Length: 95
Image 1 (cartoon, rainbow, N blue to C red):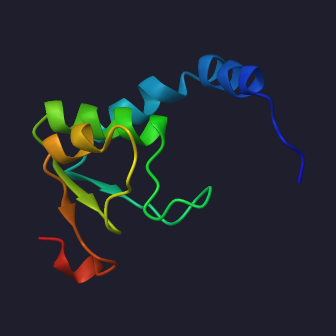
Image 2 (cartoon, rainbow, N blue to C red):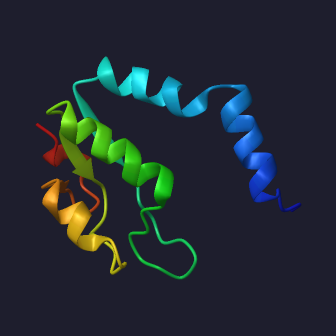
């Protein structure tokens, strides 16, 4: 696997207007489903992009579902403040 530098990732996000594109999708959705498996050794990892997408959904009064329990990260309070519904791996709990 080849690592892509942060500046290359940012260049793609700018070139393809990815952040605005995801926000448009969220605007037209009923809810936000966060799939947060273990990553970087952190169970339930939620990264920066996902956090801002959750925040955007929250501002638009969308239901926010998180597939796995919330991670222990420095910004957990911000995640909790958006009052996501934790599904504990069970998609059938979405309503």
